Image (cartoon, rainbow, N blue to C red; front, side, top):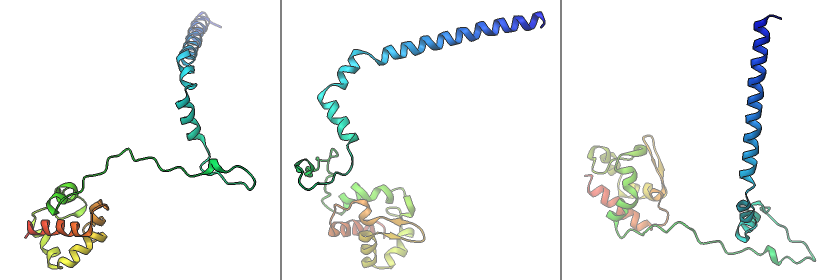
Length: 171
């Protein structure tokens, strides 16, 4: 073995030893930080324990004859955290609340609001067809219209008012 080879092996061994030592120190620091007393206190809080139990509970529990099945009663669903969307008052408000999302920029092949050329063939089909496509949804050759523009909470009459509003401004 030459002098250069033995020097390389010595330096490589030292570098490798330093890296292993650094790794062990980092592992020890990580364990110390992860086992702080604050974290153990949090894990013992009542709300935390209940939340974990709810997440890991089986999705279905079966009633067993002769056993106390009162815990299996279905609880009332929690109120939705999302606030309800305000109900539009008329066709113009519905357009502002829902229709403009696609009919403003022309997304998904929707004819743009006020574009007479794009609306002309649709208007020629008649208002009954426009109403039907707006209420029930429609997939055509040039685009897609979701039922009620995605606002399933609005009435059919309000959707018709929205269609009338767009047609009125697109003739």
